[in-house]
Image (cartoon, rainbow, N blue to C red; front, top):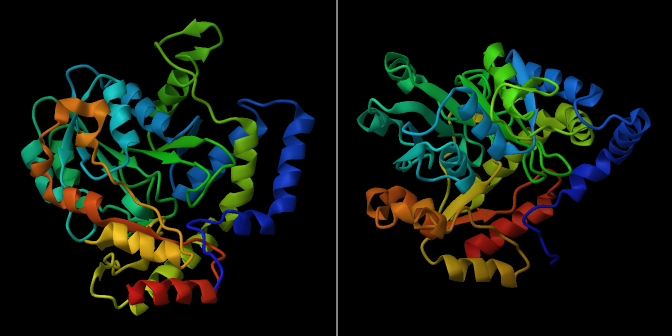
Length: 366
């Protein structure tokens, strides 16, 4: 019985190694490393993949969210509605621009934002709602679209974990007013370093995002905004262009593994994620299970050679960085449970049938 890592990127990269090598050589030969041919090509390709008009490369996913907020003019005194169950980057982007995050608990079935609670959180200061397509599951914003228009509130997608997920045939990146993507190496579409992008149909917004990420400048040495430096470099763009044509196949493989897990894990101590009716909604960046005896469960798998991960053990409102929200956790019981019980099982393209069945066997033996 061999060890099974939580994630093995080598299996993906081995099959496209020659293409990645060629992409590197082409960038090196051009000797243009920022804002060149590879950037422009990938931005066009990824916009087309998402079905959107514009894509702007950024340094990472956190910056992508922050640049959207800046480009919308959201800042001091404004409020942004955000799920309580998310990675801290979503909230960091909001507080970086000086706005206040207003949390909403997770839906008990999907673990994404409970959209039925949005209306009660809206105030005169609400400027945006950030929906997070958590674990790779697309959030259908249809129930809040009219509400957002009525109050002139922007719907921003945090699509960092959901490249290729869709709702009724519409891919994430096209569901809201603007979307932020991360291409961190472990993502479904990952670079070989940090990278991100903003995707939108609003071409004017896209140009403002580009300017904010280029020191606040549309033209060299002419600075319109107090911007920052957050751009997608040529090497990462070139690598992403190599990997993008494989994304749908990799996502389909993730779905198949998730379906096998959900069909064959029968341990009553392990709560499985809800499978969507439309398989295209979910790209299973993460396969989260809930286990009350989490430490014992993780140790059981570890002893049998199976690595796991936890997303995310400490809620944002209990992090030292956000002490202003301390003592509020009782308002978010679903999020509290997820943080206390969530375990992510290995799931990635290239897993063998033997490995998948080994994970199932060990989980069922707990």
